[in-house]
Image (cartoon, rainbow, N blue to C red; front, side):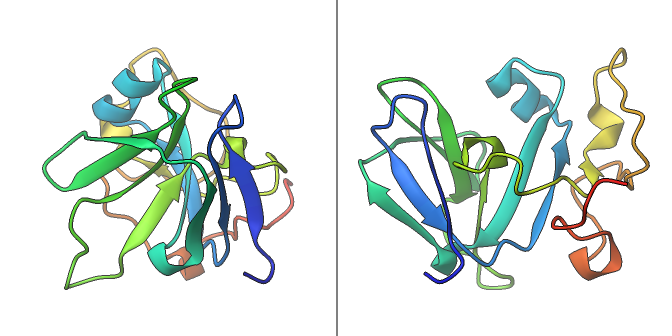
Length: 150
């Protein structure tokens, strides 16, 4: 993969590479909050074809009917998520936490999703668009995840 980012879990048992990242943001949904123990998570997405495990075999569980999450069974690090069954009506993609990339600040959030579900005490002071649920505008309509912080 040309221009690929490398990343992996905390203990180093699982490694991956990813290219063609097309979006990144914060998720405030109750599932992500509960799984992470944090008021929001940061995610980035890439086409499934551009994501490749290079070392190890992660464990998997389904957090919802359509979504599978993968993690390291040694250190517990959440690695990535994807559709349980590839969709026929849209692009199959992988979402991962950009902070597990070797260059952890290379991908910057551009949007807040599931904002209506956010923890009542948690707010951010950024000017990123906020969407009440998981339906968001196309990434081309927003600041790029590559854009420098202003």
